[in-house]
Image (cartoon, rainbow, N blue to C red; front, side, top):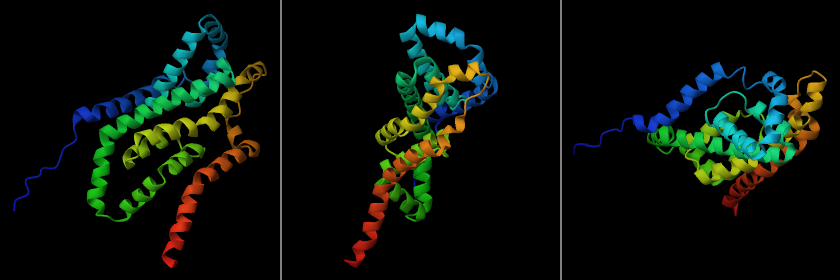
Length: 247
């Protein structure tokens, strides 16, 4: 019997969104490195405050839109955007604006990666693995998908763009990705937005904000607690599955 099945090539149409993201990210890293910076925020703070006071609804929409673009194209400056959100809008609604912008941007890049290379790589891994270790790892991920995704969002050491792209290559469900992103980035967003809300005093003192504040014990402790809660279903399932054969 002749196998008439031809391997599918990579569709340029499917790759287009991902290629555009890569090109914009490279260009943005070069051209925007001085625009999305603490110095730019400090030097233009009075103009930004004046614009916010005279066009508050528009300022909020534009801020969320810019944040979406920054995250969707993995541009440098997400931390500065969060500080700016706190500086312009306070902890609330500044944190909400940041979470909305970051979540929508993350979903966009996740969708682009999943429809571009994600599905193809996912199928390729399955065909080459033959039911081996990769399939077992993926099965464990999908059995505890929400818990794993929440951990990726809560752990400060995991870069944001990796947490956006890795799930796309592992067949993660769109809904679970969107929900865990929205709720998982809230703690960190609130912390950095609160730092941004106090930037007026930082500017007056001629200092720079301490972005390492999230690693201070009084802030890292509650985040670790949230990580433990997110990991609890995984631990319980692993413990009960080990006990089942002996029953």
